[in-house]
Length: 226
Image (cartoon, rainbow, N blue to C red; front, side):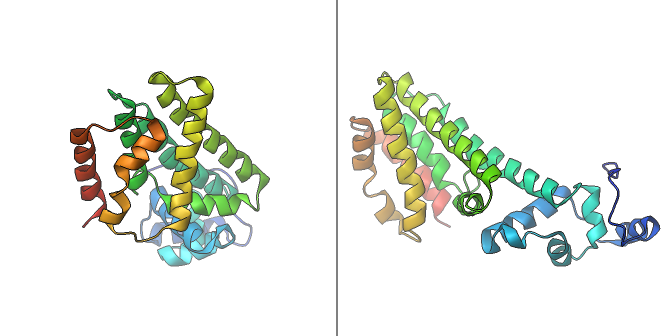
């Protein structure tokens, strides 16, 4: 078990009472707090990510929050760390995967975007909405967007594209994917992927290998269909 933080608790709850309450609470972990905070952020916005609200939903006392977080700001900072660690790192990891051709490399990126366990579009949009109200979050979001585009640009550079063309194609892919989540919901699988060869040709100026494309489609179907 992690050590209890030394940061003083709110004066309204005596230390002895907090300790007794914490021992009597249903055991929750840091990840439980962050999981719920992410859901509330997605469903209701950052203004509703409150310690007491989360504690009530978890069925624990507010004092147990301070076993894992120094303050609400600390929780929000860790929530941003989780978003960046999941969504941004997923794109960077898939961009770094080896591929024998540029079409396969782009399909690696698509694998990331279609798997909500790796890239969570709802969380991404919740952070974007949060950034409208916070310059600090805006700065982190801008840095994340820049890092994602740069990683996709590097994919094209690795396959022989010139700098400006690689950057342009990277922005087209990234902006299109983010826009897709904003505009399209519950699209049938066959509709969503019927344009795959045409997208790949437009993004890369090359025709995809049919065997690689069908292998990707099988992976995509496993990820998207129950």
